[in-house]
Length: 610
Image (cartoon, rainbow, N blue to C red; front, side, top):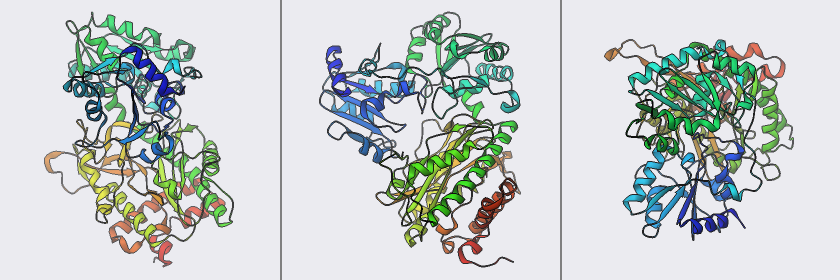
């Protein structure tokens, strides 16, 4: 019996018309531990974002534009219909489900595996049509998953103050001050990267993300870390308790939260980063304890990097640049020699070169190594035995990143190992123009990512082209590769925090032609003060400083499509790459870097620059 059949049998016994299986864990993580990949188990779709909805006679897999092609390939079409979530006003799961259900239906969902705001939207949409959202007491997928992996029990390490830039005591003091200003006497810190940042610890419970599955509850006078105590050795215990925290079992969290509601008057919960179950626990005590739903002050504090973190991030990107120089030098030579290479083997080679770098802790996400038509699958995952061979007729897109003790990296470059077509070059150059426009933008403090997104898309729009993903996300400091609250996206959000000084962001426009190729150019940048002759309004003016130090592909640039300012930007960027990275290279790799950072007119047109 397949999982969907098992769910339907269980639904019948519980009087439910539908059950929703999310991608989430109890901490609303983007990437989850193997034991929490319930949606993948049920649907066979392995992208990081998606929701499965099983009804008595049908089943739907909802995902965003990054994953639609992948979902259609992985899901059994005889069972699942893949649905694309659209921006406001377009197709979405709550409206669709509310419309197709029989009258007065009950829909089940695990309240620990859905964030507060999503649950509220679902509940309101269903209620408006006479339906009910039911918070399940147990998860129906787990009994069907006979070989479900055990919960992770990885080692926890200290991220010392000399790397974090701020002590745990200072972070707790800042948090308590922020809570007073936000009108709350306590906070549940549920997001795993927020817990890791606040406590200056790192772990390995979730693949690619150096986090520890745990909660923190902070009040005016107490702070408690809820964690599997088997992970806590003497060094970690001394580090945490010496910073003013108590350590308790992860299993005590829900009961302690309920008890806390009788002793304080208000608790802050971030509705986007905390589960519906947490808000329900506090809601049971609404007469004595108010639920304060606001952006986590830990989230914002974490997103603004201090000077120590920024130095570490830059060092991590220089180490990454060395690995990438070795990789691209080897890859271009291997392809010129006609070696038989496939997407998986080259990704493994790149990972090995990153491992050679001091302080490497692992990948920051699974390498997207994609040739030809696979490049059009935005978050493509190559598999041994079925992946494509690299060739010279189309484009190779490589999106990869590493976790280092210094920081986290995320970089995408697109190559052609033969002679690119005119269409390839035009599309690449349009993407490059958008990348330059956003990277060089100067904007006043208070500007949001939604306001900036159009800069990266405008060159593509002039040609009637676009891409179905956001343009920029925050990047952690030896933490999650995708970090909020900032986001550069075309789609408006109910809350859209401004881009602030000290934040990081990727800059990654692209273009994807289904069945043919994909193009993406991605750098990570730090938000810095811009040098402007005036200071209108007395506010800071900001811009992006790239910290990714890897050459662009001059072969794919149509220099005639670039303005003189755009050519100057590329040349200035390549000069920075050469100056920063070349002292760390020698031999063939240094020669490769020199050849690929020469002025554009030399690389593209063969002209010498005086």
